[in-house]
Every structure is written in C-alpha cells, then in structure tokens.
Image 1 (tube, rainbow, N blue to C red):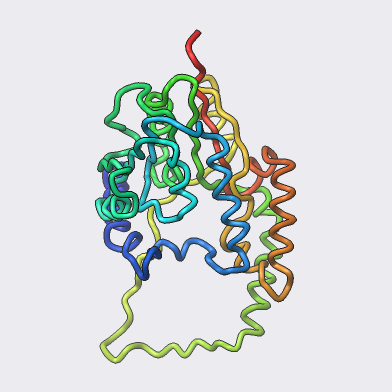
Image 2 (image 1 turned 180 degrees about the vertical axis):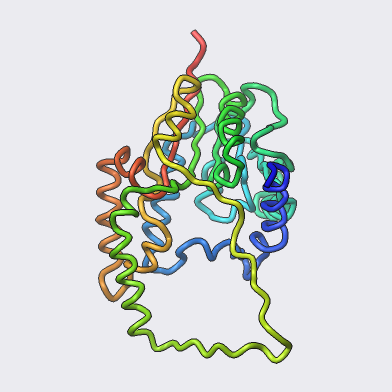
Length: 285
C-alpha cells in the first residue's frame, strides 16, 4: 500500500466512521478507549500529564492530528494560547473542533508529515495518537516537521503507542486468563441470529497502525533533536477492560499504578503501552 493510499484510508475512516457522533461529545472512535467510571479518574490524570511539559502561554499551539479535540482535558492544553492550530486530514474532525473551540481554533486540512507552516512559528505543539497512523518511512519526517515548526526554547509533546510493550507482553497471560474467566461467568450468550434483511456486513474496525518501540525511536531521533521518553499511560485499553473492575477494587489498583508511574516515569514510558515523548528545541545562543 502506497503512502497516499494509507492516508486516504485514514481520512476515509475518520470522515465516515471514526468521528461520527453517537451522542453529544461522544464519537465512534471512543470504542478504542475505556470510558467506564472505574477507569475515569486514572485516564483523566494521564491526560493531564501532557500539559506539564508545555509552556503555559503563547500565541500558537499546534495540534497535529487534532481530531475533534474530543476530551475536555485536551482543550486545557491551549487555554493559555491565543490560538490552537488544529491540523487533520479529516474535514469532519476539523468541523467538530471548530464547533467545540469556536474562534480559538484555526483549522487546517493538512498532512502532519508535510506541515504548511513557517519554521519556528509555534510556541508549543502536541500530537496525540496520530503519528503511528503514518507509513513507517514518514514517521521520522513528521517528527522533523514538529521540530522544524517549533519555536526556539519551546517543547512539543507526542503521545503514541508501542507495538512491543515489555510490560504488556509480560502480563498478557493474566489478561487472557481474565478474559476467559469473564466469558465463562458471563450471562450473555451470543445468539448468532442474522437480521432478516440478509447477512450482516463486516464493519471497519480501525485504520492503518504501525507502532514500534523505544529502541526504534532512539534510532530514529538520536542526533536530530533533543527528546525524552516519559509515561503517558502504561496499560492498554484491553488490559484495563480485562483486569480493572469495580468489584475487585479497580480504582484502588489504578491509583496505585498511577503512583508507581509518577515515581518511575521513564521506565514506564519505555516499557509500558503509551509513551509521552517530549521534544525540546534549545534556544539559540
């Protein structure tokens, strides 16, 4: 599949499925997140980690792959900025972002690997769960573009997921065990009845995703830009859905996990599921 075909697939998915609203403030893409009350506090606190690394004020904040800016925590990142520049391939996403943010949002349909902006124009940048949708050979270019358009002395924050998370790999057996137990004791039964109109059509389940690991990122960025790897969230949605439940003290275990992540953010960033990559553009001497 060519780079353009990949981008067209991503655009089509989000225009037709991912950013279609199922309720006020809730989109189809939410099925990739754990929105249960038992997980809400942990997820909220993880979202807030991004803002720690951004300058609190500025003129332009770039949101590369903004989507509709669907979470209130996401909106908070640009509150001290005059404008939030939302860049996305999906016009549906940008229409929603504009509706949510009003005149604070400047919306641009563009490719994050080929940003149509001048060097050093942004006082801060974020890219959340976006770069891994790019073809492998273009991910490095996207990091280059974030760095190029960042102002001297400022930071960009990138959140993605690893393909090979050592922590998730080592606990995969526990997830499988919990999922099997859940099926065993579940009262739900699959009836397997097709609608009268004919066989059910298979629905799209996602887009092109190519996620890698910390070693790959170091090879990609070392010598090109200063960066650090911290934790955004160390466990996957599947892990939480399988192992975190109200009846078994789920909130307590997630609070404990967050406490551990705060004390070893680099270890959990490299070994957990979702790293938070901070890129710093040093001020000119």
